[in-house]
Image 1: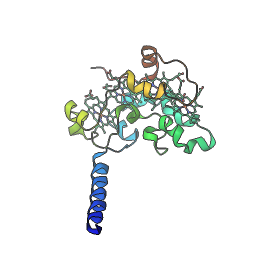
Image 2: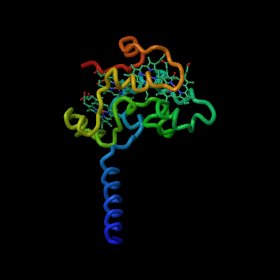
Image 3: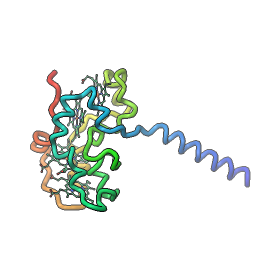
Image 4: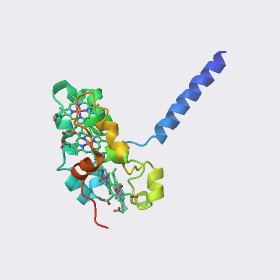
Length: 147
Ligand code: HEC
Ligand code: HEC
Ligand code: HEC
Ligand code: HEC
């Protein structure tokens, strides 16, 4: 019995370690800036970049608010950053992976669609204006590099 339990605990620890290693980490918008200056500069002027500043007092540390007002729910990455829409970047940020669309997506890169936005815009614990994707995309998404 004893031995079995020890093996069991050992396996769970191993499993946790594996899952931990598989999950990509948030690295913050500043890390995307060096390669995506156009997107970064226009994003920085939009309400998303300032979403954390809207929180007052204790709410700046309230997980329930950080979920949508900080990147990946982390106060160290305030606002709706690049990775709030494009997914955590630790595994796709290298030039080699970024240049290869398939590899980037496999490493967690998300090309956001309406559902990505609605995850936040239709699930707030407070009142929000009705969300219309076409209008919101026009107003709320950064500039994109011309092809
Ligand atoms: C070392 C440079 C570098 C870094 C750092 C980097 N990228 Fe990229 N990224 C590229 C290159 C190069 C491409 C492909 C060509 C292009 O679209 O400019 C690309 C493409 C993309 C695309 C379009 C992908 C596609 O297949 O359509 C997105 C979205 C993107 N990056 C987001 C990000 C985000 C978000 C971050 C930060 C977490 C980031 N990148 C960090 C270099 C980088
Ligand atoms: C599921 C996502 C989500 C969560 C969780 C969330 N918010 Fe928001 N919040 C939003 C969105 C989306 C907007 C912007 C709505 C708009 O202007 O279209 C917003 C806007 C706001 C604003 C600006 C409101 C205004 O009328 O200008 C404040 C303040 C705010 N949220 C506070 C909070 C607080 C405090 C919490 C935690 C109790 C919280 N939010 C949790 C999504 C969320
Ligand atoms: C991680 C949560 C989250 C995601 C994902 C998200 N948003 Fe937001 N959005 C917010 C929050 C929070 C605000 C409020 C910022 C503020 O007012 O300071 C906001 C504000 C906005 C605003 C400004 C609203 C206004 O009244 O001017 C627009 C437009 C917008 N979002 C469009 C989008 C679009 C389009 C997408 C998807 C491509 C998207 N958002 C994805 C959380 C999110
Ligand atoms: C509110 C969600 C949202 C945020 C935040 C966001 N993006 Fe995007 N991004 C989009 C959408 C939507 C597209 C267009 C996808 C499409 O056209 O299908 C896009 C496209 C891109 C592309 C490909 C087109 C191009 O410009 O070459 C890159 C690169 C990119 N984003 C980088 C970034 C970076 C860097 C940041 C942070 C500074 C960022 N994004 C923040 C929603 C977002």
